[in-house]
Image (cartoon, rainbow, N blue to C red; front, side):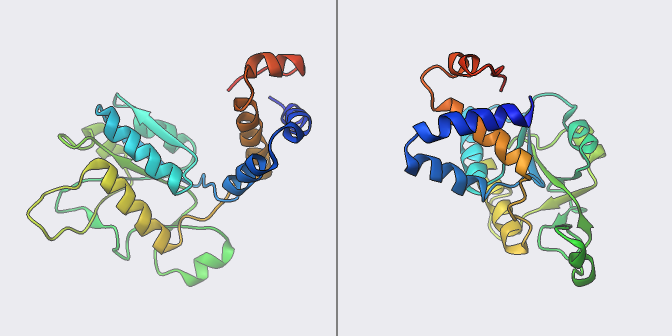
Length: 211
């Protein structure tokens, strides 16, 4: 869909919304992140998955991949992501290791950072019983784990996601990075979702409503 269509909906329907609601949308857009994404592989417990999604939304992560078969890595690699997967094997890096990558946000980062830098980072999590699949392990650029000192051998999945995102925020990896066209597309979708009949409303404006 064209940016002209997005702008038409935003300019026509935006003024009909409560100002506080529209301002809330703009505040959220200012905090959204696309350079870091999350892959949840074979997570069959929907309550746990829902908790993960709440964590991701709270940290501003815009995209998440929910996969139930062994093809999860190909999507992210095709989009230029460096894939790092959680794994409890002895060869995995601690997330706070100097060898764990950071996001390259601008040209100045290369000169200042002692860490390996990537343009995009995909972090993959498997289910709590089997972890990631052998396929995803082979496709990953690296494996990482979270520091633990107790009797338990692993964290709950949603807890692992939350802790990982907290580390990334401390590392400075979670910076808002939406381009203007991304902002327009999201605002278009959010405004239409506020309408009683989004499809009919879009059609009335001559716009194909395709989410």
